[in-house]
Image 1 (cartoon, rainbow, N blue to C red):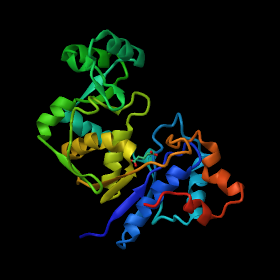
Image 2: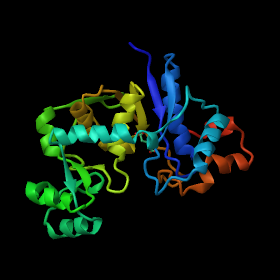
Image 3: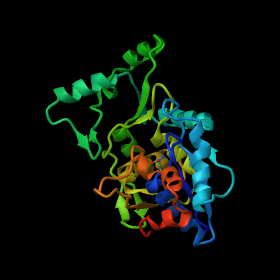
Image 4: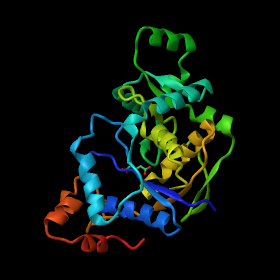
Length: 280
Ligand code: GLU
């Protein structure tokens, strides 16, 4: 078996909290127990939310925790060309279409349809722009409209046929192409999306094992589809349990008191912080 390569992929939009430390440790331990490599990637495509000071703060907190990584960190914001070229490939395949809807129009359309399709993350895109005639699409594009690009999930499934993926906790799972519907592949304002960027950059970094929180399990169904469409290798997955606060609520950046920075400034030693994490 080739040596594992894992990654920790935080967004520089806030300080790391215990949940991030857990995710980083799972990835680090998985790689290191088999002599593999543990990489760091900043998921910083959303320039509306990224703050420059958090890159260094995240690196410093990881080092302080003893969760050092191998090689230089990759910034997804430097990977725009690769993301655009993957989108181009999907368009060529007929697996992506432009969407001109505003958020408001989508909400109104969902409210109008009885029995609008829902997924694990709420209402799915109702497919309005999938049905646009081609000449209408062309004239809107020619008029300078800036669309988002969406996956045509039905077409994608026809192209790839049935797919599955392996999760080290859950075993072999069939990929459900309809689970998240026609997800956005490229946002109007940033030209890419989490789903597109994560798949392209995991392949670029030669990640063999994607370890991440189980809140992202639904996304993996889409990622598997994108990997197959783009001809990218299929990593294995390990979706781990999330760290929760004392009330069982999953940690988020708003839990400032549980940020690594706050715990450290409160006088805790790295080992004491690590001891607060669940046993992997
Ligand atoms: N950037 C994501 C997060 O901070 C991680 C995504 C992933 O691991 O695929 O939750």
